[in-house]
Amino acid sequence: MAYFLITDSITTALLILLVVTFIYYLYRARKNNIFHRLGVPGPERIPVLGEMFHVIRKHMTMHDTDLVRQYGKVVGIYEGTAPALLVTDLDLVRNVLIKDSHVFINRRGMEGIGGPLEHSLIALKDEEWKNARSIVSPTFSSAKLKAMYTLMGEVGDTYRDRLLEYADKQELFNINELNGQHALDSISSCLFGIETNSLKNENATLIKHLKKFFTVDFKNIFLYIFLISPRLARYLGKKGYSIFPSDTINYVSNIVNHVISQRRQHLERRNDFIQMMIDHEEAVKVEEAMTEQTKTKDPQQQWGTLKKTLNDKEIFSQGLLFLTAGFETTSALLSFFCYFMTIEPVVQEKVYEEIQQELGNDEITYEKLNRLQYLEMAINETLRMYPPFIRLNRVASYDYQLGDYHVPKGSSVNVPVYQIHHDPEYWPEPEKFIPERFSPAEKVKRHPMTFLPFGDGPRNCIGMRFALLEAKLAIAKALRDVELQKCEKTEVPLQLGKMNTLKAKNGVWVRAVRRSE
Ligand code: HEM
Image (cartoon, rainbow, N blue to C red; front, top):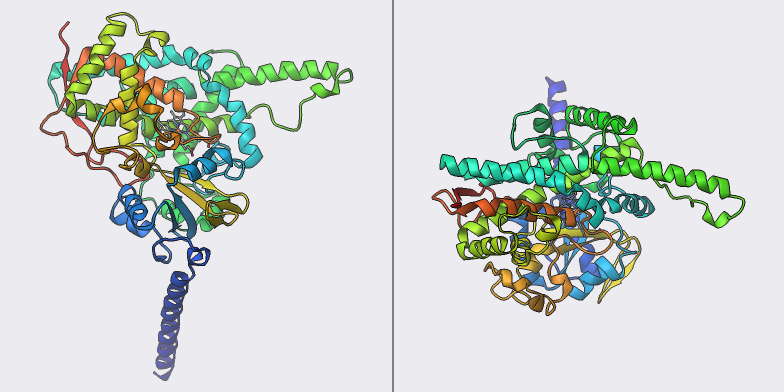
């Protein structure tokens, strides 16, 4: 009896000690706010969760707007336990993204979240990133995009045909799903070298696996760990844990390795990313052999220490990143665009008239597509209203003076893109959809940092031109034959999901009507 009483009181004492220690930790963490010491305005620090606490309650877009309204153009916040500056002063934004980009070349570490993405652009840092980016960048040149145009067009045709099917069946539908299938097919075909055909068969095993890459949401415990404690995420990442399911990684990597091996043996050729990496590898081998021969004659010609090609693992990693970075973003862009077409029928009519005027019923060639200026303006206005990525992020590699504030080495700087895109100081009546804001005459009047849907500087979105081409082509093909209409299920205004990537929470429901011949 006495024994149990003693152990009970020890347990109680330990519990009390634990609770007191935890409360003391919370108190210390709240007081220990680096921004108070640096004189940066900002909200009280919330221990452990930091800004996540508010982001879960409202939405990151609204939270950023509130922060800027309350504290000004440079605000000190905590992302979980990591301090970060939220910057909306446009000249300072330009310094971070472009002018002093050598200081801000990296993003917040993706260790842990990386897994199969560990060799991809999103995870690489410093020289390794620069090296990989220079190898991969030519994939997105005008000439290479032109070479992919036919593959993209085939997916665009299927997209239009599916819309016509809905029109003929007079069925209301969530166009978000169709746009997701379109984005998946387009990127898989043009960049990854595999035909998913999800627009035709959405239940295939490969598609089910690929979808798992995109269902990383707030239910995922690892994402919380990453947001709250990057240090712990890094540790778990090194131990082999990943945000991505291992069965999916194995399934997809087997398919891609098979594609790579076919290409190396010259059993198949396609104008896609994998082919470009293999062609590049072969060109480098030839060049290296030639350099070897002339080595003694001209030592200046030798390769430096930089890597010139990607190995199979790295090709897979980059391809997978293209798929994950390009899927949700491009499908969100298409869905938001469709939404605006339904609630702004006058704009849709103008887009249609331009398509008729410039293309008639002719084949939509790469050159002709570039003539659709009004369509481009409407796409830009969609990206202003709903930029798929709400915030940009950079990390200072050295101590840095940002205007009046000192940024210690290792700190994050965030640029709240959505907030800037909705600031009435730069965009009068920001909640109105007005494509004319993007006419050449209006564009030159604005600070270049007022429009950042693809980021800016050397670390901007590498797939920007690919995404815009893909969206423009799909829209031109679709709207030439189909009119999109608002229906009783269309949600106005749209409710947005709470994730960092903007998307319509309940989808975009529309009616498609076949245009008369
Ligand atoms: C509408 C579609 C898209 C939007 C709005 C978008 C937006 C962005 C943004 C905002 C960033 C960060 C830029 C920065 O930090 O300055 C980014 C990075 C990136 N995007 Fe996109 N993206 C889109 C489509 C794509 C596509 C289709 C691909 C691939 C084909 C892609 C591949 C990437 C990659 C690889 C990065 C990381 C680049 C690096 O760190 O070097 N994106 N994207």
